[in-house]
Length: 360
Image (cartoon, rainbow, N blue to C red; front, top):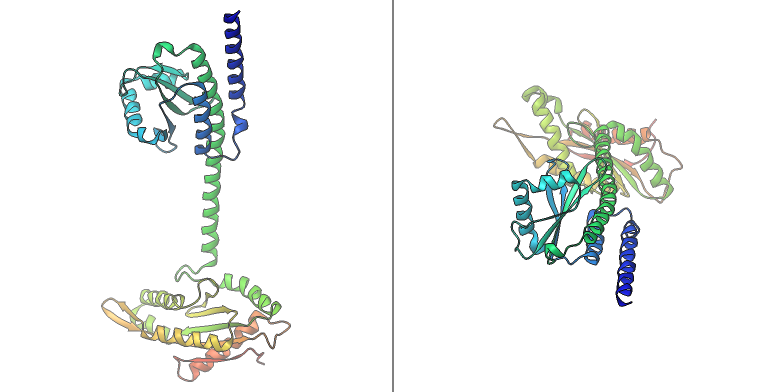
């Protein structure tokens, strides 16, 4: 009777283990990453067999080689890698992969009183990786039951891993596509030479900035700036030098404005429009003066020569105390252009400004 009772208990225990393995996927919260699945796998593995060390090797997408991903305990990493290298050199590793079944193999690096089990992780189409398992159980004591349970666990693990790897690949492709689309969007709205925004971005976003300022009764200003005698630079030093001057000019401005709020757009040729949300005309003039001085003191080196430039600024805006019902971007820029013309007409290298008004 005692023998029957022991067999019955063993059978019940086996059934419990099989049921637990069948619920492997239920213990994974999707979307999960490979490390999370690895931890669940290790826990189930230790419920099936004594484990001294366990290492996960996954096929690398680029090199198609087996790369060591995780080891438990971590201090066994180097010796697990060395064991796999030896198994590959002697041809046992490829035999196991082709066989696609868990295999009990002799240790080539580890002590002789330990046993090694290799668990290929495979799907119907391909090999995902392999698990190297080191156990203190002697080879003769590892039963067919142990191997069948390990086979079931490897299949469950492979299924979940394949879905996770596929999900990660799709996510990476999606991120790459988003990044590419973002770069395309950036290129479509930036000036290719200077890197600031282009006329298209200006036409699209300036109306929104004006409407928002009017709606919330915020101060708002713009500055139209122009490089003085830029044609002379091109005529004297050539267009390549002119391109460098434009780049340096933009860098001088970008270095001083608020990167999280202000923005600069190339309006045309050597003219640029600086948009200053939540900025009064008084503060915008102070900003323009700082920019003017920074540009004037900047020295540009070109083929052994030093070039200095100046710029003129036309500033306009409106404040919250006297809001307009509606302001067209064209009228707003025209007002700034009137003050820019005034600055140039008075000798250049200066700032002229005034509150927004419709010129007739």
